[in-house]
Image (cartoon, rainbow, N blue to C red; front, side, top):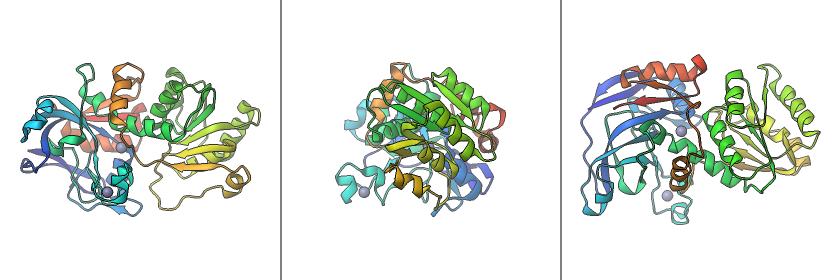
Length: 348
Ligand SMILES: [Zn+2]
Ligand SMILES: [Zn+2]
């Protein structure tokens, strides 16, 4: 079968590999679409996200959907021939966290397209049946591949324990930020505002219903963002803030934008092991900082929200590429060229 294989920094090539053989409990997926994630870009460029290191050759891709084309146990008949979205993180099932439902923080997790585990940028992938979630006919394959990042956004909003009427700030309006903003808008908040350094992204946020946006300058973006936040909130700041950026400054802006005793949810991945946190402001305001690790049990609800038309992807999923163009796609995503927000690699 054909795979798009990472061979080292900035190098992805089409390589033939044997079709996977099913192990117990697995089904075979004919991959239709794979979303390109910011975390994939860290791996593509540097081969690492902090201390998480990948070694070539490795097949990336963890946001994916496809058709179940082979099963081996009759109890998985219900999946046969169905389009499914797949949860990419397989918990060990036996540790303290897996056993208490927090499989997203399992330290023995096998993650498709992560260290030591091939991902979905290939014609076929074998996955555990219980990690497959059928999607209705109305959801196309590229959108089904985005159930994964949408589930991250849903988990982030859940972690914030939103109360009706609260105000929220989303820092970073890439796909995760725009999805988070949309979920906040259907979660009863009274105001959602967003900040990004790319004007096109703030424009898209506005089109999706975000109430106010700010284009942060590249220089002094913390100071400039904070003074804008003060102005539009009349020095009250926000009840909840989300860092959805891929930069260290995102955490600082989110903390500075949070009102005393408010919550800041840290979703973004700067790619570094250490990011500066404004501890003075966090302590004086007694902020609650909450990190977010992917998702847990969020796929079914995410699929329902998408099916009901509550989340819009038309301005988010901006680019489609063929498998042979995978390297070009990764370069475009890395450089945020051509108003690209989210790209998918479409195999069928
Ligand atoms: Zn992702
Ligand atoms: Zn575990």
